[in-house]
Image (cartoon, rainbow, N blue to C red; front, side):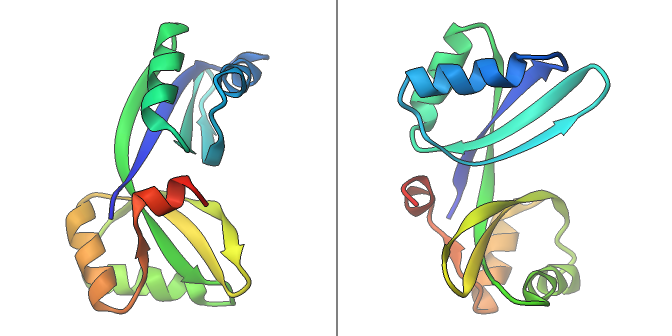
Amino acid sequence: MRVEQISVFLENKAGRLAEVTSILSEADINIRALSLADTSDFGVLRLIVDDNQKAVETLKNRGFTIGETDVAAVEVEDRPGGLHKILEILNESQVNVEYMYAFAPYSGDKAVMIFRFDNIDEAVKILSKNGVNVINGNDVYTM
């Protein structure tokens, strides 16, 4: 139930983000979800793509520093309180959410959130036990 995420470390200067998207576009790699966090000097672009291995190789070959992390894709009810329900389950079990970001919804009543947990296996087990759908990585890459 893990999803492979790549992190691209970027200098915080004009054009660097466009350079990454250009490289991925030229390599015919589709971005499924992304998050960008920055400081004054650098940024971290977190990506879920349809071909992780090809993206990593392509970006490394172009001089980018890449990290790889396992995250979880969690189906969330697309209504007020939907995310809170998930976070409350995690809180009651003392599972820490390190970060999260949204994934484009793929159905009318569900949204998908990408979560990085301090203990991904425990988090997935707890969520599944509580009836929360944790989506398989292969399904995420093709959404």
